[in-house]
Length: 193
Image (cartoon, rainbow, N blue to C red):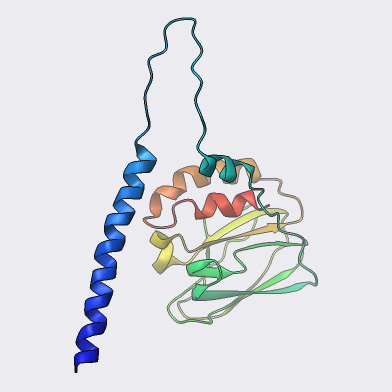
């Protein structure tokens, strides 16, 4: 009985400490020194090393997937985080087939209006059901899981050339308001193409 009481107490203490540490980190990130710059003077600003590292990190681009049949799993958790499609970003050839597998329950795959190529067929699977789609129109396709869209459970497929990338990026900037979590996930995915 003592072990059962001790474990939650340690966990709660860790959470309380982590909360303070996190709060301190947030304050440190949003607090920046200010200086007044007179007209004509230059202001030397030192960029924190964390920002330099982020700016210098290169986004790994997705390569063309081999074969004409591709599997995308619908998962509660995977290498990319919680509520994800795996792979989340894939490049395929025109005429290839994508098999969405309901690996975990309560997911679906639904194309997003305005975020698929003009003239392309849309799709919508039922919850917890596999669906296969053949993509015959070149361009970028963005899709979601309806029940988990607020967690940014989205995925991106590039078929052939990204002929509609500008339109998709414009739509994605406003579509991100649907996300309560992982708010930069879709933009990160698009950057991988």
